Length: 420
Image (cartoon, rainbow, N blue to C red; front, top):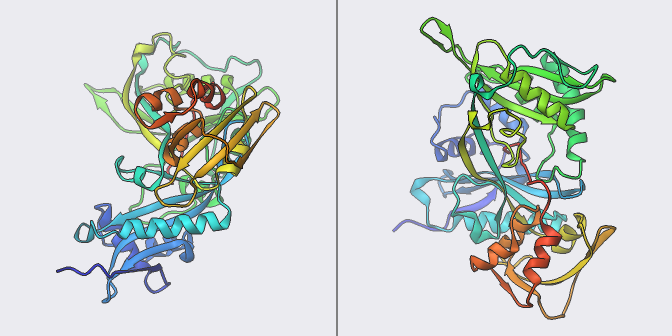
């Protein structure tokens, strides 16, 4: 009988190459790793936050890593989040509780550090609900037929008088894009966005690389308003597709963020007006993105994917609920069940447009739910009324679900543009 006694521990310097091999095997990637890739990947890893399951002979059979993250919440504030990534269990060692043991340890450490929540991108939907996560932000991708879109192909300048779009080199894009991203994260309706480190920018602009990582090099463009301030950025790749001796290039968006609607509209128009480009692939966007309705013919944009993206798990419920804004005054008592025994309890939320407070209480509950349901509600995307009808939330006081919808839902849907 196979042993269940694999040791869960933080990875040492000497064990990191074996941990990385297990990670690649778990994601069905080649286990051949160059010394250069090991070196570059090691630079991004804090070993104390990198867990592995190790057999007595030293084999690594499961991987798990966390990193600090700042998450934008409704209203523009940012909270500390425990970001979970690099989660694998080798097919030879599943159903032994390895993931549960690593998750329990990481979540307890995050709560002790003071993280308000935990976030992750789920490769498989059924796994993370049992650990108290709920899908909090969804992503939609469109494929746009440029010729059918109806935009003027002779377009040459933005609608704002004096504004312009410039192609940019990697270093300029990296420097100005980082400043723009910080501004965009602070906007009140950009909930779901997460911080980007200097390493993040270097990885995506060619400042960090290793052989065979990504042969496609993106083009970079910046939108500047009449005063010369950068208000939007675009990174895209283009292939070499030709049909019947005519170019039918596919352009793929790697990054498109904007601080103003005018900048976003202009960047989409720019991309859809490029010579030779027949098809634009949007990449993951918020489900209520300006695309496709900014097109004269929205049917030119075909939905190619719609899926859950960012998952959220409350850790410090009072801090989390007090951090976001609320459109109207209202009070709710929430009874929360936590399968990991970390964040459950009964909490009184007193909310108003001027601020909010959340404290433990002994008052009777208005709504009862798991912490994962609160994770789905928190960024404003999900409806308490719908969760009630799905049996994922109990309404203890008539009208409480409707009040929760008024308090928690947001005018624009959350968007998480970055994997981690």
